[in-house]
Image (cartoon, rainbow, N blue to C red):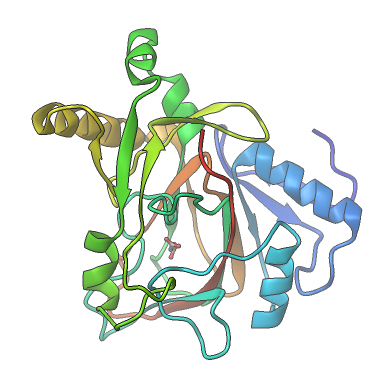
Length: 276
Ligand code: SIN
């Protein structure tokens, strides 16, 4: 793929590229928008350095890619329900996103992408790892692909969000119901048409139709497979870096190896389609 307005430098052979020559605080022209969109499809996660964005500019950048998603349970800065605060410091008992996951896969229509802008990062530490679910799917045997085709798994949020965010009386939908959804184990990316694994150890609870022992064994095998380093890239944050990942074909985990230092920023999440 060739790019005219932006510079795209892969950070690994399988997944991840750094994008230069763009200021995300400014309205994106159609050509720059299309090239960032194409780079995201090609590299699955893209990174930007030295971006100063207000919350409004961050939301405006996200809205170029679609309607913004509102998280069912996570806290937001006042007046910005579409923004999720990412924060850990010396008082934290846990850090968000520390296990492999794709965002909010418990929603029937999970987000297509997430855009994380970290304003303050620890040094050293605090990297985010990304795993390509295309590469994970492609590396399975033909027999395992055939076995998984057509299987679905439940993704639930109560066990993830209740302990982390407390039960504050009202969730996003106002009726106090933690979202859960039945998702295909192998999904087809709606734009690229490529197949990707779609189970993760944070939200996925069991495979529909299998006995618990069978489901646990298959899921544990897939989680170990997703952890294969050859499917990964790792982003070394600096203050004011941005990561934009495609939730339809990646998973990520944020490393909490920097306690008691502070890591702080905001995430905007773009709505997606029902997986098929
Ligand atoms: C997340 O899961 O959105 C958090 C990722 C990170 O903090 O690097």
